[in-house]
Length: 118
Image 1 (cartoon, rainbow, N blue to C red):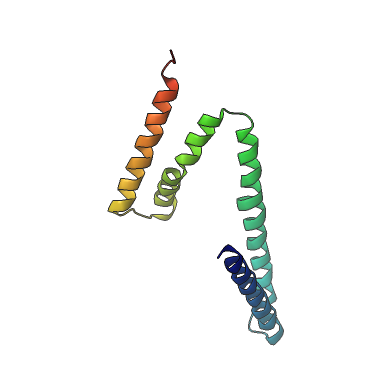
Image 2: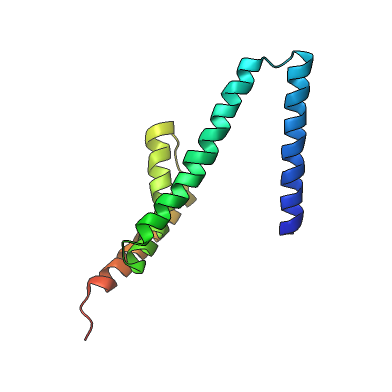
C-alpha cells in the first residue's frame, strides 16, 4: 500500500505541474502567480521541512532521550494550542479527551523520571 500511495502522490504532483505549465502557456495563469507559487513551495521545502528536521536533530543531540521523547509526545497539544491561537480552531470532545490523555501520560513519565531511583 505504501508504494502505491507514493506512486499516486508522484503522479498527482506531475499532473499538477503539467496543468500549471499548460495554464501558463495558454494564458490562464499569470507568470507572477508562478513566482508566488515558487516562493511558497520553496518556503515549504526549506523552512517547514528541511529546517525542522535540522532543528530536531540539533536539539536531540543536546538533550536526554527521555526529555526529547516527552517533547515529541506533547507535540499534538502544542499543535492544538497554536491552531487555536493563530487560526481560531477549536477542538471537539474527542480532541479534549485525547489532549488530556496525552498530557496525563507526559506528566506521569516526567514525574517518574524525577523520582529518585533506589
